[in-house]
Length: 282
Image (spheres, one colour):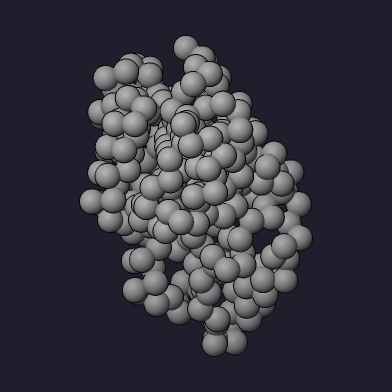
Protein backbone atom coordinates (compact mmCIF):
# COMPACT_ATOMS: atom_id res chain seq x y z
CA UNK A 1 0.00 0.00 0.00
CA UNK A 2 1.28 3.54 -0.74
CA UNK A 3 2.28 5.99 1.96
CA UNK A 4 -0.62 7.97 3.44
CA UNK A 5 -0.47 11.75 3.23
CA UNK A 6 -0.35 11.95 7.03
CA UNK A 7 2.10 9.08 7.57
CA UNK A 8 4.32 9.18 10.63
CA UNK A 9 8.09 9.33 10.23
CA UNK A 10 10.68 8.62 12.93
CA UNK A 11 14.07 9.91 11.78
CA UNK A 12 17.34 9.52 13.68
CA UNK A 13 20.29 11.89 13.42
CA UNK A 14 18.46 15.04 12.31
CA UNK A 15 20.91 17.70 13.52
CA UNK A 16 22.86 17.89 10.24
CA UNK A 17 23.16 16.49 6.73
CA UNK A 18 20.77 13.93 5.33
CA UNK A 19 18.70 13.70 8.48
CA UNK A 20 18.12 17.43 8.76
CA UNK A 21 17.21 17.94 5.11
CA UNK A 22 14.97 14.89 5.06
CA UNK A 23 13.16 15.95 8.25
CA UNK A 24 12.52 19.41 6.83
CA UNK A 25 11.17 17.99 3.58
CA UNK A 26 8.97 15.49 5.42
CA UNK A 27 7.42 18.16 7.64
CA UNK A 28 7.00 20.67 4.83
CA UNK A 29 5.40 17.90 2.78
CA UNK A 30 2.56 17.57 5.28
CA UNK A 31 3.64 14.36 6.98
CA UNK A 32 3.86 13.87 10.74
CA UNK A 33 7.33 13.43 12.17
CA UNK A 34 9.39 12.64 15.24
CA UNK A 35 12.73 14.35 14.59
CA UNK A 36 15.60 13.34 16.82
CA UNK A 37 19.11 14.30 17.82
CA UNK A 38 21.31 13.70 20.82
CA UNK A 39 20.33 17.23 21.84
CA UNK A 40 16.74 17.95 20.83
CA UNK A 41 17.39 21.69 20.99
CA UNK A 42 19.39 21.35 17.79
CA UNK A 43 16.29 20.17 15.91
CA UNK A 44 13.65 22.23 17.72
CA UNK A 45 13.47 24.61 14.74
CA UNK A 46 12.41 21.70 12.54
CA UNK A 47 9.53 20.80 14.85
CA UNK A 48 8.55 24.48 14.95
CA UNK A 49 7.75 24.32 11.23
CA UNK A 50 4.52 22.52 12.13
CA UNK A 51 4.12 22.03 15.90
CA UNK A 52 0.86 20.17 15.40
CA UNK A 53 2.56 17.55 13.22
CA UNK A 54 6.14 17.39 14.46
CA UNK A 55 7.96 16.85 17.72
CA UNK A 56 11.66 17.06 18.59
CA UNK A 57 13.05 14.35 20.86
CA UNK A 58 16.40 13.64 22.51
CA UNK A 59 17.79 10.43 21.06
CA UNK A 60 21.21 8.91 21.40
CA UNK A 61 20.77 5.55 19.68
CA UNK A 62 23.32 3.98 22.02
CA UNK A 63 21.00 4.58 25.01
CA UNK A 64 18.16 2.10 25.43
CA UNK A 65 16.04 4.38 27.60
CA UNK A 66 16.10 7.14 25.00
CA UNK A 67 15.17 4.68 22.25
CA UNK A 68 12.17 3.50 24.25
CA UNK A 69 11.15 7.09 25.01
CA UNK A 70 11.35 8.16 21.35
CA UNK A 71 9.24 5.25 20.18
CA UNK A 72 6.71 5.82 22.95
CA UNK A 73 6.51 9.51 22.04
CA UNK A 74 5.66 8.58 18.47
CA UNK A 75 2.98 6.15 19.58
CA UNK A 76 1.43 8.48 22.16
CA UNK A 77 1.50 11.56 19.94
CA UNK A 78 0.55 10.04 16.60
CA UNK A 79 -0.65 6.49 17.29
CA UNK A 80 1.60 4.78 14.75
CA UNK A 81 5.00 4.71 13.04
CA UNK A 82 4.98 4.28 9.27
CA UNK A 83 8.57 5.10 8.29
CA UNK A 84 11.75 4.58 10.30
CA UNK A 85 14.83 6.25 8.88
CA UNK A 86 18.03 4.98 10.48
CA UNK A 87 20.33 7.86 9.67
CA UNK A 88 22.30 8.38 12.89
CA UNK A 89 25.98 7.42 12.69
CA UNK A 90 29.39 8.78 11.81
CA UNK A 91 32.65 8.03 10.04
CA UNK A 92 35.94 6.82 11.46
CA UNK A 93 39.06 6.66 9.29
CA UNK A 94 42.42 5.10 10.03
CA UNK A 95 44.47 2.13 8.93
CA UNK A 96 43.24 -1.25 10.09
CA UNK A 97 46.49 -1.77 11.98
CA UNK A 98 46.49 1.56 13.81
CA UNK A 99 42.85 1.73 14.89
CA UNK A 100 42.07 2.64 18.46
CA UNK A 101 39.96 -0.10 20.01
CA UNK A 102 37.70 2.31 21.91
CA UNK A 103 37.04 4.31 18.74
CA UNK A 104 36.11 1.17 16.80
CA UNK A 105 33.74 -0.01 19.51
CA UNK A 106 32.12 3.42 19.84
CA UNK A 107 31.47 3.52 16.11
CA UNK A 108 29.86 0.10 16.14
CA UNK A 109 27.66 1.11 19.08
CA UNK A 110 26.27 4.00 17.04
CA UNK A 111 26.36 2.70 13.46
CA UNK A 112 25.39 -0.90 14.13
CA UNK A 113 24.05 -1.81 17.57
CA UNK A 114 22.10 1.43 17.99
CA UNK A 115 20.50 0.96 14.58
CA UNK A 116 19.62 -2.62 15.46
CA UNK A 117 18.11 -1.57 18.78
CA UNK A 118 15.82 1.17 17.52
CA UNK A 119 14.61 -1.05 14.68
CA UNK A 120 13.72 -3.78 17.18
CA UNK A 121 11.82 -1.19 19.21
CA UNK A 122 9.79 -0.02 16.18
CA UNK A 123 9.00 -3.43 14.69
CA UNK A 124 6.14 -4.37 17.08
CA UNK A 125 4.24 -1.25 15.95
CA UNK A 126 4.84 -1.96 12.27
CA UNK A 127 3.85 -5.61 12.69
CA UNK A 128 0.62 -4.60 14.39
CA UNK A 129 -0.14 -2.19 11.53
CA UNK A 130 0.90 -4.74 8.91
CA UNK A 131 2.69 -1.86 7.24
CA UNK A 132 6.00 -0.06 7.51
CA UNK A 133 9.02 1.26 5.69
CA UNK A 134 12.55 1.01 7.08
CA UNK A 135 15.23 3.06 5.34
CA UNK A 136 18.76 2.32 6.51
CA UNK A 137 21.28 4.95 5.47
CA UNK A 138 24.43 2.91 4.96
CA UNK A 139 27.07 3.97 2.43
CA UNK A 140 28.87 2.99 -0.73
CA UNK A 141 31.34 1.70 1.89
CA UNK A 142 28.67 -0.85 2.82
CA UNK A 143 29.33 -2.49 -0.54
CA UNK A 144 32.93 -1.50 -1.28
CA UNK A 145 35.89 -1.23 1.09
CA UNK A 146 38.36 1.64 0.71
CA UNK A 147 41.78 2.15 2.31
CA UNK A 148 41.49 4.02 5.57
CA UNK A 149 37.82 3.11 6.04
CA UNK A 150 38.04 -0.51 7.12
CA UNK A 151 36.07 -0.15 10.34
CA UNK A 152 33.53 2.26 8.91
CA UNK A 153 33.04 -0.13 5.99
CA UNK A 154 32.71 -3.03 8.41
CA UNK A 155 29.94 -1.22 10.29
CA UNK A 156 28.05 -0.51 7.09
CA UNK A 157 28.61 -4.02 5.69
CA UNK A 158 27.11 -5.32 8.93
CA UNK A 159 23.96 -3.27 8.41
CA UNK A 160 23.72 -4.41 4.81
CA UNK A 161 23.86 -8.10 5.70
CA UNK A 162 21.45 -7.65 8.60
CA UNK A 163 19.05 -5.80 6.29
CA UNK A 164 18.93 -8.82 3.96
CA UNK A 165 17.75 -11.02 6.82
CA UNK A 166 15.34 -8.41 8.17
CA UNK A 167 13.77 -7.93 4.75
CA UNK A 168 13.20 -11.67 4.37
CA UNK A 169 11.54 -11.81 7.80
CA UNK A 170 9.23 -8.80 7.55
CA UNK A 171 8.29 -8.62 3.85
CA UNK A 172 5.30 -10.96 4.37
CA UNK A 173 4.08 -8.54 7.06
CA UNK A 174 3.88 -5.56 4.74
CA UNK A 175 7.16 -4.01 5.91
CA UNK A 176 9.72 -2.86 3.35
CA UNK A 177 13.46 -2.60 4.03
CA UNK A 178 15.72 -0.48 1.84
CA UNK A 179 19.38 0.42 2.23
CA UNK A 180 20.32 3.83 0.87
CA UNK A 181 24.00 3.84 -0.10
CA UNK A 182 25.33 7.39 -0.61
CA UNK A 183 28.62 8.19 -2.24
CA UNK A 184 30.24 11.59 -1.58
CA UNK A 185 27.59 14.10 -0.48
CA UNK A 186 27.93 17.65 0.77
CA UNK A 187 27.12 16.88 4.39
CA UNK A 188 29.13 17.16 7.59
CA UNK A 189 30.24 13.50 7.34
CA UNK A 190 33.75 14.40 6.15
CA UNK A 191 33.95 17.51 8.32
CA UNK A 192 32.98 17.96 11.95
CA UNK A 193 31.41 14.51 12.23
CA UNK A 194 34.42 12.56 10.96
CA UNK A 195 36.84 10.94 13.41
CA UNK A 196 40.33 10.18 12.11
CA UNK A 197 43.45 8.54 13.51
CA UNK A 198 46.32 9.63 11.27
CA UNK A 199 48.66 6.92 10.04
CA UNK A 200 52.21 7.07 11.41
CA UNK A 201 53.39 4.06 9.42
CA UNK A 202 55.20 4.98 6.21
CA UNK A 203 54.05 1.79 4.50
CA UNK A 204 50.49 3.15 4.52
CA UNK A 205 51.29 6.68 3.34
CA UNK A 206 50.24 6.09 -0.27
CA UNK A 207 47.02 4.26 0.61
CA UNK A 208 45.58 5.25 3.99
CA UNK A 209 47.41 8.55 4.26
CA UNK A 210 46.35 9.65 0.80
CA UNK A 211 42.76 8.63 1.41
CA UNK A 212 42.51 10.55 4.68
CA UNK A 213 43.99 13.67 3.11
CA UNK A 214 41.64 13.49 0.11
CA UNK A 215 38.60 13.08 2.36
CA UNK A 216 39.44 16.22 4.31
CA UNK A 217 40.36 18.19 1.20
CA UNK A 218 37.09 17.42 -0.55
CA UNK A 219 34.86 18.19 2.43
CA UNK A 220 32.38 20.84 1.41
CA UNK A 221 32.75 20.31 -2.32
CA UNK A 222 31.28 16.83 -2.76
CA UNK A 223 28.92 16.50 -5.75
CA UNK A 224 25.98 14.93 -3.88
CA UNK A 225 23.03 17.18 -2.91
CA UNK A 226 21.44 16.26 0.48
CA UNK A 227 18.15 17.92 -0.48
CA UNK A 228 17.79 15.78 -3.59
CA UNK A 229 18.73 12.74 -1.50
CA UNK A 230 15.93 13.59 0.93
CA UNK A 231 13.45 13.91 -1.90
CA UNK A 232 14.54 10.51 -3.20
CA UNK A 233 14.08 8.92 0.24
CA UNK A 234 10.53 10.26 0.47
CA UNK A 235 9.82 8.80 -2.97
CA UNK A 236 11.25 5.44 -1.91
CA UNK A 237 9.09 5.32 1.21
CA UNK A 238 6.04 5.87 -0.96
CA UNK A 239 6.69 2.98 -3.34
CA UNK A 240 4.41 -0.04 -3.16
CA UNK A 241 7.41 -2.36 -3.42
CA UNK A 242 10.53 -0.43 -2.37
CA UNK A 243 13.85 -1.85 -3.58
CA UNK A 244 16.50 -3.48 -1.44
CA UNK A 245 19.36 -1.21 -2.64
CA UNK A 246 19.56 2.34 -3.93
CA UNK A 247 22.95 3.94 -4.49
CA UNK A 248 22.88 7.74 -4.30
CA UNK A 249 25.15 9.91 -6.42
CA UNK A 250 26.92 9.39 -9.75
CA UNK A 251 30.31 8.66 -8.19
CA UNK A 252 28.90 6.07 -5.85
CA UNK A 253 26.82 4.48 -8.61
CA UNK A 254 29.87 4.10 -10.83
CA UNK A 255 32.08 2.65 -8.12
CA UNK A 256 29.48 0.17 -6.90
CA UNK A 257 28.38 -1.12 -10.29
CA UNK A 258 31.97 -1.53 -11.50
CA UNK A 259 32.99 -3.34 -8.32
CA UNK A 260 30.01 -5.68 -8.29
CA UNK A 261 30.57 -6.66 -11.93
CA UNK A 262 34.23 -7.35 -11.19
CA UNK A 263 33.29 -9.35 -8.10
CA UNK A 264 30.86 -11.52 -10.04
CA UNK A 265 33.47 -12.14 -12.74
CA UNK A 266 35.99 -13.18 -10.09
CA UNK A 267 33.53 -15.58 -8.43
CA UNK A 268 32.56 -17.12 -11.76
CA UNK A 269 36.22 -17.52 -12.73
CA UNK A 270 36.59 -19.93 -9.79
CA UNK A 271 33.52 -21.98 -10.63
CA UNK A 272 35.31 -25.31 -10.88
CA UNK A 273 37.08 -24.80 -7.56
CA UNK A 274 33.82 -23.73 -5.89
CA UNK A 275 31.77 -26.68 -7.12
CA UNK A 276 34.64 -29.04 -6.43
CA UNK A 277 34.39 -28.53 -2.69
CA UNK A 278 31.13 -30.52 -2.45
CA UNK A 279 31.12 -34.23 -1.67
CA UNK A 280 31.85 -36.14 -4.85
CA UNK A 281 28.88 -38.45 -4.45
CA UNK A 282 30.99 -41.64 -4.43
